[in-house]
Amino acid sequence: MLKTPFFSIIIPTLNEEKYLPRLLKDLVKQSFQDFEVIHVDGNSEDETLAVGQEFTKKLKLKTRVVKKRNVAYQRNTGAKLARGEWLIFMDADNQLLKDFLATIKKQLLKNPEISVFSCWVSLESNEVLKKTAEKVINYALELNFLFGRPLAFGALIGCQRSLAKTTQFDETQKVYEDSKFVNELVNKGAVFQLFKNPTYTYSTRRMDKEGMIKMLRMGIVTTLHFMRGKDFSKNDFGYSMEGGKYYDQLPKTSLQNLKNLLKTVSENQRLRAKKILNQLKKL
Image 1: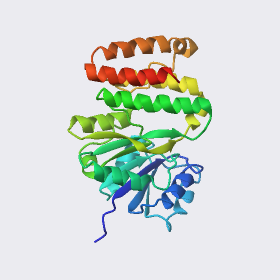
Image 2 (image 1 turned 135 degrees about the vertical axis):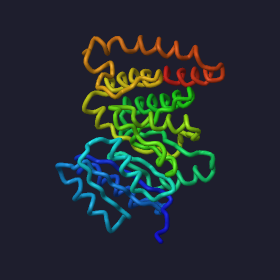
Image 3 (image 1 turned 90 degrees about the vertical axis):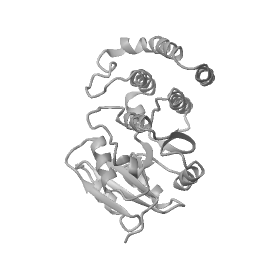
């Protein structure tokens, strides 16, 4: 009988021949090696499968090709194939320090009540603007965690395998399927934790392509929609179809929505939230 690995790393891909090898190299270098890798590819048109197969002698790597190009479906498929005690869903463009998995295991053993988690991010650049964006992203994660409706990037979500048997990623959602998954688990009694250590390196390629400020503003608006329970099954996220004038209005509108939200939380939550917001003002 095969020994159950501690972690199953689930990586959905679609045309990731450039980035997947970086992540797999980081996994090869991990100081903690009790894990398997489940690679679920959405029928890529490039060399993603070929570059992935080059690591079969270095990693316990299982590859499944699916015709359905849907990241939630691919994660769910990977979860069904996994044998690990803990599942960690990762994006192919992540990068990890060599002690990432060892530190995650240490955190989980130290806090046995935790059953689902995510981590703070580090952005793959030392540029001042991107370091500011990094702080904004992490403070936003903290704020949502504080308000009891945690955000979690699909780039890094971990949970006990038993939970993934009863709750799946919603394949109808165009965005926020990751945070919805976490919130459904929490609503069923799972204990969520946002680890500040370890961090993982989150790719800025989307920000580089679409613009840093634009992406941050989009993130603020969609996050506020998510916190208010918006469904994202249609491609009508409320920001992408209205042009630059809409974005010019975002800071004021978003700030007012956040102020309204603060009125509905407890005094303790309000004080902690104000502390985080004051830190954001200093950026």
